Length: 414
Image (cartoon, rainbow, N blue to C red; front, side, top):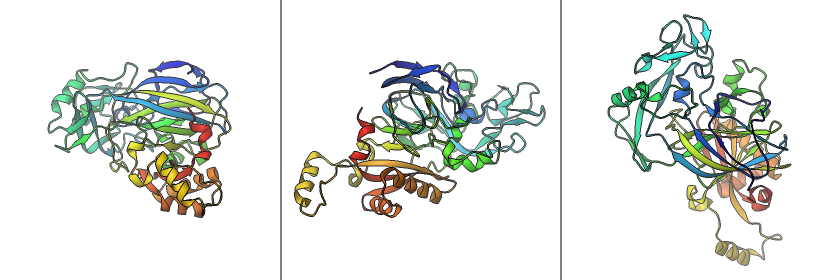
């Protein structure tokens, strides 16, 4: 094992030239404490993204055309609460995009500094003029409390005391986080819902070619980015690191394409749990403590991320074959097989676009380029023993295909 590092510094934009602050080589272990994504940054006008993510890691020798393997070893939920819900923009308090370009209509200042003077959506005001400045608010939301062991979450009936405690600084955010606590919004529309805690990492991978808001490093955000200051941004510039795919849990592997020298691996947006699709647009964001191993894979061309999931997150028909099953299949079908029978394992390929249909086509195209199979054969293989699943309904999908191990053997030997 190579270098072991700890990161607790955060940025809101990511991409372009990677500063050589955190430099690693070979296989390295990274420990991080990550602040919540989404609502905290979304109500903090000075943050130019929906996420605060870790400062990027520079990997010696990483060049475009390589890939980085990230093995998720541990995810711990640190937060006691999470507040989230469906968003509603506040007209006049942003330009183009309420998440990245908050605006004070009184001071005419973009991404102004603020102060918190009370709970609720009216509690956030411009630090200069004192006017209400929240760029978006929760239209319907909840505050969830977790048990001591972080096994279950429960949406509380009354979040007013939690909001007051957050206003008085009695919540927990990492030391270097700049976000306003989302708890102050006092959201409690959704009551008495309980859920198992199954944490995963929502934003994980390599940096895009150009510097963009960290929460927008995904194809389903491309059109909205192009309408603002990123008119010339293309699909090739991003790495789809912001996936919000619930299978990126402990024991999983993410393989991310390298688009810039040094790779710029970064992490953020830990969720306590989420169903496929993230239908509300946001979910149970938390402060999370994670440990990952990273490994550079030279000359491993990918157009988008690939996930090797934990067996616990797979349905029976898509799960790994046991040695006994493989032995039986080889014996039973050796006479009809055309040569050796390959070992197949479940691999999940990420695709994105401005619609779900576009995201699916993008994933099919990426699988075809990676494997050499025709798009029609990819469709057949994903239909026989595969699936189409949704990370976000806005256009982020992942296709599971039982893939010959030989395609990824070079990458996952860690």
